[in-house]
Length: 86
Image (tube, rainbow, N blue to C red; front, side, top):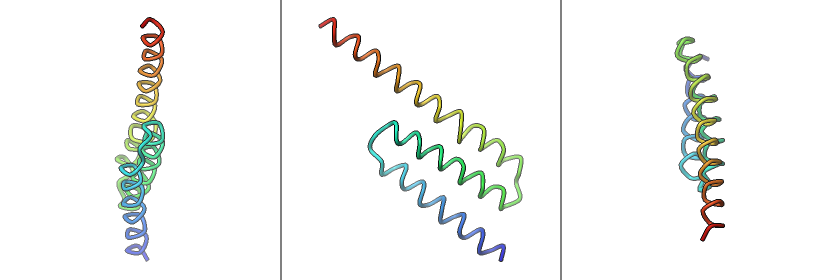
């Protein structure tokens, strides 16, 4: 039973990582990256590493995608401002 859960979690990681690479829009990539972080946290929980899972949940699922989205927003806004001055 435990081996089946590990295999399913690994398959979910492979699918979500492939989706993160396949998506072309940067905002959607950040959102898929967040899903990948949650799936990795589940995998670490299944592998009985709850401390690593909590770290992954905080950093990989919340903080990194949030920082990426804020950076995309700032770059897009700066690009609009520079486009008006030309």
